[in-house]
Image (cartoon, rainbow, N blue to C red; front, side, top):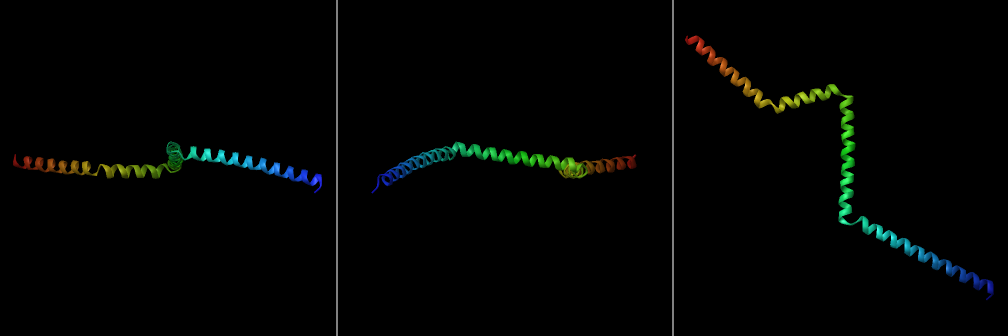
Amino acid sequence: MKMTQKNDDIFKLRNLAIEKKEARENLSEDLSETKERLRPANLIQEAKDKALDRVQKTGESALQGVKDNPGKVASVAAAATLLALRKPITNYFTNRRADDDSAKTNDAEE
C-alpha cells in the first residue's frame, strides 16, 4: 500500500467521523426541539394560537361580508329581532285586543 493511499484512507475516515459527529449533534438538537414542542403546555399554547388566528380570520371575513352586503345584514338582523321578540309581541297584541274588547263591552253596558 502506498503512503498516499493510506493518507487518503485516513482522511476519508476522519471526514466520516466528523460527519458522524455533526449528524449526531443535529439529531440531538432536533430531538430537543421536538421534546420542547411536544410538551403539553406548548401544545396547548400552539392550539390556542391557531384557534385565535382562525377566529380572527373568520371575524375579518364576516366583517367584510357585512360591509359588502349591508341590506342583507339589516334584513337578517330585523328577522332575528322579530323572531327573538315573537312572544312579547304576540302577548302585546293579545292583551291589546283583550283590553279593546273589555273597553267595548264597558261602553256597550253604559
